[in-house]
Each structure stands twice: as structure tokens, then as C-alpha cells.
Length: 88
Image (cartoon, rainbow, N blue to C red; front, side, top):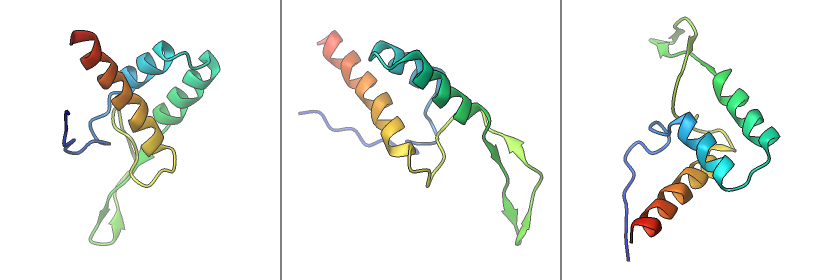
């Protein structure tokens, strides 16, 4: 049995890793492109004392609260699991 506690799991997901794993798992190219575009076009802002900052672009991680995020994280985790199995 192997147990892992992922700290800041969603924040640390590499987009290129996600895309690589999706392609290796046989996802259609169009799906990989759609997910990549959804991630690349994300904009964020922070509320400071109730006032929003200027928007900024993020370059890694998955959005908390997005309904797709848990599934995308599971894809990356499955890729990690496949690597562990390959080494064993």
C-alpha cells in the first residue's frame, strides 16, 4: 500500500504534464487542445480589503471550485501512479 498526501495539490499541477499524460492515456487531440485552451485563457484577480486587484494570468495550477478540476487532477495523479508502477 502506498499513501500520498498532496499539499496544495491543485496549485502545483503543471499544465504541460497534464497535457502529456492526457495524450499518453489516449485522449483525443481535440480534447487535449480544449483543456489547454481553457487553462491558458484563465485570468485571476485577488480581493484586497474588498477591492479587486488588476487581473493577472496564471501559468500553472488548476482553479479551485471549477467542476472540471478534480477530474483533471485525477488524470495527473493517474500519470504519477503509472510512473510508480513502471519503476517497480
